[in-house]
Amino acid sequence: MTILYPVKGNLYVNLTNRCPCNCTFCIRNEAPGVYGSDSLWLEREPTVDEVKSEFEKFPPESYNEVVFCGYGEPFERFDDMVSIAIFAKQKYNKQVRVNTNGLGNLICEKPCESALEGAIDTVSISLNAPDRDEYNSITRPKWKNAYDEMLQFAVNVKPYVKKVMFTIVDLLSEEDTQKCVELAERLGIELRIRKFE
Image (cartoon, one colour):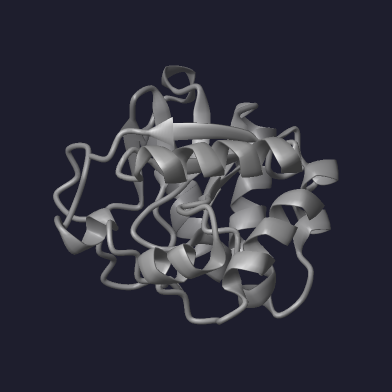
């Protein structure tokens, strides 16, 4: 199983294949693996100890950041993610980022932002769309209130982590991209437009 995999100078953690969304553009619908990994589909979810032991295979000085992002939503294993993040920070002195759909509070069924303090440095949230209807059409989330919850999470998590950012892929129209820029500015959150790969 591919539990850890290097990407562009960072070390990525693949904790789960579970996700409450079914995004139309999701890479996992197109390929079994990315960035040289044969497959990011897990046979089973690795234990916390298994993940920690995998770090021994990757020299920490070779990587800038540890990133929770695989073929599932990291918040599906919230407590394990936090535990591993703290381990990576304490043992290897690494910055830790989580790439998320921003639906952690719905997944955990309670507010979870404050539990990220001291564990996660950067939260990168897939904004995907400038409004609720477009978001639901593209992201196809499990919950009807997902868009509003995602935006609220982005605002609420700011006091607990060093950096919060939204991401969109460059598949959006120019008009929708501009609306996303304006939305991010209103909420005081950085927006990164990433190339669809």
